[in-house]
Image 1 (spheres, rainbow, N blue to C red):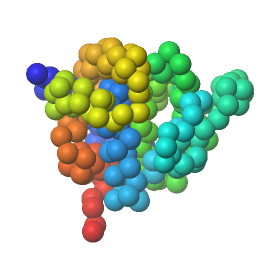
Image 2 (cartoon, rainbow, N blue to C red):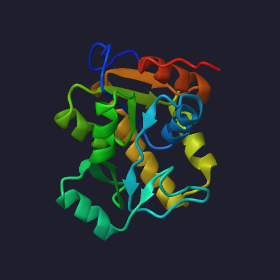
Image 3 (cartoon, helix red, strand yellow):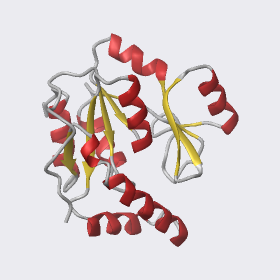
Image 4 (tube, helix red, strand yellow):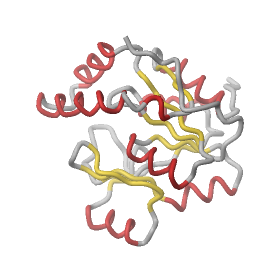
Length: 199
């Protein structure tokens, strides 16, 4: 059983940027897609990555798919708000410019990133709100990972090992949202950003 009762501190009433992180296969992308579809007021940052697209993923919508060389150039130019090597293989990161632009416009900004990226942003942007997306329990997380069918057995074991470490970081976050159902989790997250479903 996973205890979701504690967080890093009181929930920030107002924050320019909300960071959503959690263990692999918890459903960050699915919840973010629900936010994108149902809450257009919220601007969802598009991460850059060096990994290849999965079936159905669209460049510029799900991720910005870039080469290793281009990613390295962005880092060298100081254009990444955060970045990390995930699962020991591919780089993921958040381009700085678009985030700063939307914050200046007063839009609610949501970053969906991995744990290492969240830690970088906590160091550089402590005023942000940090939300941990958690599974209802470990078995549910395993079922989601296996059911996704996009990784081979070796990759699944690597991701499960990573997930165990990531779950232990929950108390670093301001608040936990349990992803029991996607719509409920998305509604709770949107509420934190001060946005309600008008449909």
